[in-house]
Amino acid sequence: MRKNIVAGNWKMNNGLIQTETLISELKQQTKTSNAEVMIAPTFTNLWHAFQSTRQDDIEVVAQNMHFAENGAYTGEVSASMLKSIGIQTVILGHSERRAYFNETDESLAQKVDAALEHDMRIVFCFGEELSDRKSGNEEAVVESQIKKALFHLDASAYKNIVLAYEPVWAIGTGETASPEQAQDMHAFIRKTLESKYGHTIADDMTILYGGSVKPGNAKEIFSKPDVDGGLIGGAALKAEDFYAIVNAF
Ligand code: 13P
Image (cartoon, rainbow, N blue to C red; front, top):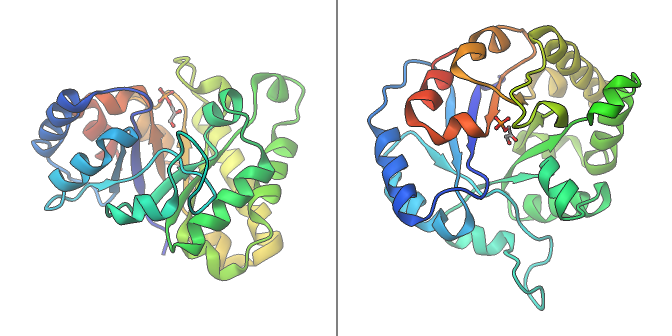
């Protein structure tokens, strides 16, 4: 069964005190939908966030990890380090990681493998740039990103994978893909999966949309049959807005 998920990607925001405050505000919100809730604070606050949400219906997830197990990779964090503090899920392939930190389809495939070796769940992000959409290449770009990072996997790996379609032109810009644009791409993503792994895996896959999702547009986007939730940036930093989105299902 496909799950609905709303995940808050906090990006490089919130020190320890703000993390404590936001988490206590999140706990005061009432969840009326069946969506799973995830938050992704920065590395320095993962342990604290994990500890303080243990009793709550909120999963704390990481924004990134390295593919190596350990060693001379100054500044990096491995899957086993995340697991050692209780983190089970990692976001991989965010467009900001691809754009500013030179992450490639090939290095992402290595990260995917490392996360799966540790039996972690992955929220795998991809999406086209504005120039790709303007030239009508959005489907080819998305298909290539998915194939290069994920199509080496066995079908059994997909129970640990959630996909997040985030068109780069809609991230932090206030410009959202229309519900129809999101639906069309999500249906295409499902068809792409089906071509390799068959109907059941494609149909069971949770596919999130990300890019300027707000309380005012979430309901319409989530009403589309192939949109199973959202990966939320800016609006995840306000507890009320985030739960308005969670409850948009
Ligand atoms: P915004 O919701 O701020 O556009 O960010 C989306 C995003 O990048 C989530 O990962």
